[in-house]
Amino acid sequence: MAVLGSYEYADWSAHLLPWEECQSKLAAFCEEVGLPDTPAGFVAHLKDAHLTAAAHLDAGYLHNADLVIDEGGVPTLKRRRGKGTDAEAERRMPERSLLSIVARCAHWLTWYRRFGPAFGSDPKIKDKLGRYSLAVFTGGINIGPYEAAKHIAGVTARELSMVRNRHITLKKLNAAIADVVNAFAELDVGKAWGTATRWPPGAAHPQL
Image 1 (cartoon, one colour):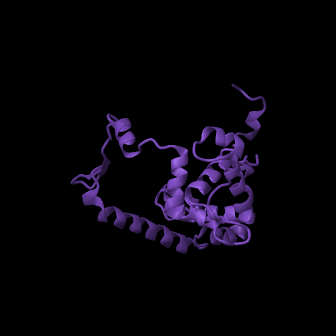
Image 2 (cartoon, rainbow, N blue to C red):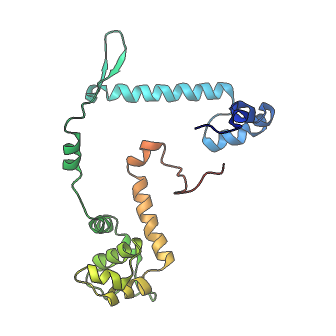
Image 3 (cartoon, rainbow, N blue to C red):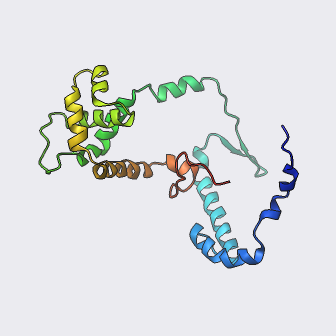
């Protein structure tokens, strides 16, 4: 596929800001991203980052079965074999239903404690965890109480409707979401993509 006139945009460097304009924005940019704004400071920061990474690697080398450093000091990563990967993944991650995941999360984090009657008294619900988990699950997949009651045994449309309309408000829901987000921030998985301190907006279109 060819785009007529695209050669006009071939030189990406022509669209960069002039260095004089960059210089005036450098200090603010470095402060925002957490980097020194001087050449000597940046070099020292980079050296320290490399030394820290090297020390971390050295400390775990004996337990790293995938990395081999030969007598000449050349590091080599072993090629992992894919045979049996699918079966091992299934063994480590058994299939679970979305509703059970919501309920497990509620049990571990107790985010359901955020919900309750507007007047603040203890709700007269025998299984608060189960009822609130059902309400959040059905609301999250955009199923109304009456439609949900047709497909979920042991709960009536009135029970779901009462919880969603009288026990859950936007403020309470945001507090429960904060519990989940804060718990996720403590996990290592968020750091697989960076520092886990900044997140892009979901499903947002970039401005082109």
